[in-house]
Image (tube, rainbow, N blue to C red; front, side):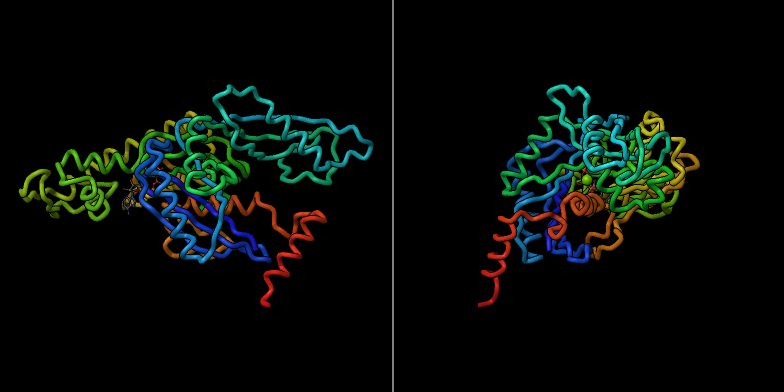
Length: 408
Ligand SMILES: Nc1ncnc2c1ncn2[C@@H]1O[C@H](COP(=O)(O)OP(=O)(O)OP(=O)(O)O)[C@@H](O)[C@H]1O
Ligand SMILES: [Mg+2]
């Protein structure tokens, strides 16, 4: 059995989720931990000590809950420094039998990656959407097929070296090794999107605390991604400042309890009472007015998303519409506001419900789509122990280990 660990280091929370891959390939929860995050802003580390402490806390909680220990994790990355580059490459097979072999696909992947990157950029993903064999498009796995020209369509995802290094350093200081760095909205997409949605065209929009990530999936893979430096925390800040609430925590509480992304859905009569900043004065404001402020900011965030989707060139190809994740999507009426902003597109909230994986109830929430997706990504890239061809030395070590672990 293998442990797969996802670590989502967000602006408001750090979440660590460990799953155990069973022999039949299914994933079983093995513990999770959530810690408040204060050292991150818009996908960037701004306070290393605070970030390391939050990672440690989340990891310790997950280990204690699952009674497991681990030293490696798959971590999520986002921020304005992320860029996506569409790529196409081709190779020729000259062998007489023209069968596509694993080494051909390696050669093709290498070709795709031959993009001159400036020294401050690091390649994160080479996401292949489809192969084209002698002009025949839509091939998912060409191994064993026959062709003389093999093309691949892919999206390369790159990130800023400094941002990635700082994040990696935080994880390492917290005692974990980084197995892979994964684009966060890509991970969220794995947790909430169906293969059909990814095929016909869908936008995944993760409204977090500090960033709103946008990713477009089409023809079964990711074709565009970007991150906007806005999120649910701005909404909280607006009500905090405008209504002169006692502190940001109170603003967060009132937003969650009484806020709505559509003011028109809130009764006109209801009032919210609170204590004014720096005084003992009790204020009462109409709940609708409170939501008007929230709606204005949420509408602005979604309009920025729409502009980003238009810029991607895929806005007219989103047959499956928009799926919203992230804590910011939990405000009542957010999907309805989305339908107003995105015109005729269908909009739904994405709660992680991965196939073949039992999920703890606490993680069945749009804010945990990323961490759940990180474990699913891990399951895709980490080899199953039985599938890996063990060397003689490794087999001897494993036999000895088993022998020593046997109850004496
Ligand atoms: N029930 C809720 N109602 C309204 N807003 C909520 C609710 N739950 C969470 N939020 C908001 O969601 C935001 C946090 O979302 P999330 O946990 O997805 O962010 P994060 O992953 O920590 O940050 P980021 O992805 O930006 O780095 C906060 O702004 C919070 O106010
Ligand atoms: Mg997040």
